[in-house]
Amino acid sequence: EIVLTQSPGTLSLSPGERATLSCRASQSISSGSYLAWYQQKPGQAPRLLIYGASSRATGIPDRFSGSGSGTDFTLTISRLEPEDFAVYYCQHYGSLLTFGGGTKVEIK
Amino acid sequence: QVQLVQSGAEVKKPGASVKVSCKASGYTFTSYVISWVRQAPGQGLEWMGWISAYNGNTNYAQKFLGRVTMTTDTSTSTAYMEVRSLRSDDTAVYYCARDERRLLNLWGQGTLVIVSS
Image (cartoon, rainbow over all chains, first blue to last red; front, side, top):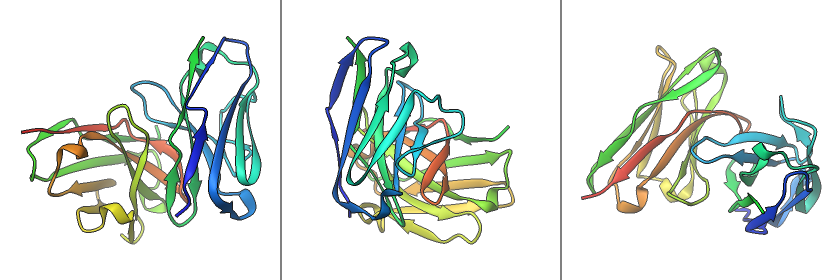
């Protein structure tokens, strides 16, 4: 089973700043394709942001971007909007499914 | 409107069972898989397993084998997830999600299950 480790646990930033979130896998994710990112706001269900490591899901603004391959993946939010302050989870998907522990992006 | 609507909150005693429902609308239910994910208070997301709405095939996370059963009723486009022998650490919000090759692109609103004596 692939274990996903996200860092940092909490990121304190101001609106307009750039956010860089990391997700490291315990073993190489084949072709890097099976890595996704979700956003979760308090009291809400998660929302799919990125799949295939770098493809934006339908309706996701282009300030969100994903990159990486092998064991190291990154979610970047180019300029934080007030609605972007939330918890972000990476996810490996294949026949099974695992989530990272999450990164909270909070207002500084 | 494409959506998943889950059943309401439950309070159960330790050792009891709970069955959560997830009703799909706005899409062809049998064309997708449903995954179940839970989230303990203040914690992260934990995948529990999936069920094919097409043929009923299931795949459970190792942790839940033998204690969780997922079923579907195609006549009502509803998926169900039952957890038996509840413990206090089963207290969580349980989500169903439409699963497209393990990408969860549509989620229910969540069902809070509280296990307390």
